[in-house]
Image (cartoon, rainbow, N blue to C red; front, side):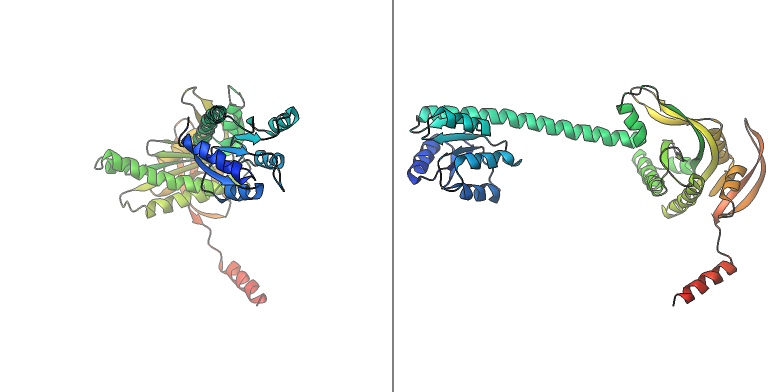
Length: 367
């Protein structure tokens, strides 16, 4: 028996409602009644009471028990509520029709109280099992969604989809991408004076702001390595000009470091563009990573650059053309590559007086 179960009795006959209610309340059930289908629907819709079982008469004026049963089973919010038919109709066709419409059981009037209790408890036990099954299903769906979110935090969405699709080895060549390395200058000395919690909180604050910038510029964060940050453009998805996007991000990263309020902290950035190999490595703790000369050059540009500077290759300088201002660094010797000409990217090109005059003229023309 389920003493806490709430039951709704639907019957147009007042005496029948009274007999059923008293019999059920004697067994410890909480009972509410409705004299017709429309009243029952209003009760069910009113909330917040949730009924564990419905006892329904067949022969009622207006909407009869068949139609109400059909209505209940068609409503996703009510379909799982057990319905036991209690009717004076004892013919097999009525029983079959109700069962086909979704009724959980059928009892004829006059009913035996012991049999009624047994049938109700059986229906409630079945519902409890169904509820447990639904709870497990919801928990599984929530866990799958959580796993999906975690996977997307680790891997780009297309790569995650390929892994889920069964690909065991993911390795791709990309002919033209931009690779940006950034390293926090002064962080090691600062961290030595901080607690472990403060170190992690500061890194999380800074790298979270970088993550937001990567999303803003439609770039893909690859990983962090200690106090270094790696992001790439043009690797996955469509982006019109990944070199320009990375240049904008590099300048925004410098601004973000200035705003973080840590006076002894600056950023060193290296940016290069070219071909790379990208793929997933590992099995239990996998990661998506990049390899190739382009990656090595970007890393060395960062390590050979100045604090608070964006150090770019001559290839990046040529691709950005006149959209940014540059300071020539000169020829430097990069390990494994030899001497190359590099530049410091400073900021966006400011409009010339002529362009400003032209813009002002356009504005005046529209007045």
